[in-house]
Length: 553
Image 1 (cartoon, helix red, strand yellow):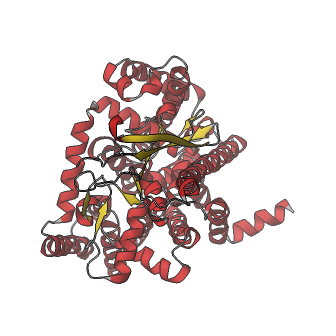
Image 2: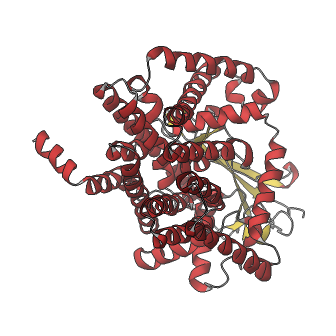
């Protein structure tokens, strides 16, 4: 039986990875919308009504009603994709997550096809990407990241094939895919220098292939002009300015930011650290861990760092969180080491340079250029790291297949647990919103709320109103709802509170992607230095205030 399965896999590798994606993501299709999902849903609904004006509406996302073009830091292609998916599959959780599953399939199939050009084990490279926490969690949202990566990987596929085959049409199609990647998420712009350098190394002279890079440049120029004409601001340059200004406010040192980014890479690409004993000698791995621990001790002794991350400053959680931080940061170092070693072994080959620049560019963007470090900013390097893992295994690994298989299996299991934890967190957020209306469904009072993300989506779906701190005004008898673990919240003054209560929705213990007490900040390192954290996160708590006087403006 096992031999028959093995032969079928060998004969149908593309079907194998497609089925694996469905098996890994299928159980989570009903995940409630959370974090930034609502922004993309509202954008898609606007596109459905006014396809020529994607940002022509207002939202309350930061406690003040503002134009969408001011709030979002992403271009609109994901909105068009979700609008199409909503029309086909429906606007519910399962329907929109099906669109995300399709994008995830395209990423893994693209990784497989590109890996065939770079290594002899493309199925290994594809599974090394699929069996990772960052990929599964990102693919289980309706945000733009996995869709951008799908365009990214297939742009590279056609670019590499076009240069190898001297096929002008493929380089042109690659340029079109680069443009789509850029207009899905601005990080897609990083493809331009990456492909330009690869083209120069591969061809050693300019040729018709350069025309493919002019297409995304033209698309970016048109987008800048279009948004300037429609909204009075060129949105690409505005997003770049936002990232710079917010990053400076956070106040992290470059060393701190680099180590946090490495922890996100190591934890997100867990296949590398968990399979490390099959790729390097133990003394190499141990040396990386010790060096990382020493740097981590220096960083974690900094008062500002501990102030921002209280989980590293408390006696009960410090050792646990610090151990996770060091382990995953060491894993991130090993991912970079894969790229460095591959270049040094094949310094005249353009392929390892492409992979190394791909990994290094994503790392430097996530660590030093993006407004925050998060799993979504690490996501683009996963296919390159997966291919590098396969190349290392073939050329310099220790040839311990059982150790490699164990590492892949352990990473897959970890990825499923992390995705399940994120799934349960989203359920707890939705239940907290539903519990509010279960308590007050018989009253005539207006229900207001602070906080955003998925909580906002489900509160508004039931008829509550988001507080506008500048222009809103609540009346005596109104109910004000404030979630504890959220953003842009401000409790009312004690003198206007008639009655106070709270609701609590437990979160399953053991693992979470998002809580300051555990050091887990998958969606932003502002919350924690880990992409996910082992430990017991507190329940989702919602405070309820019945007002006895109008809240002053």
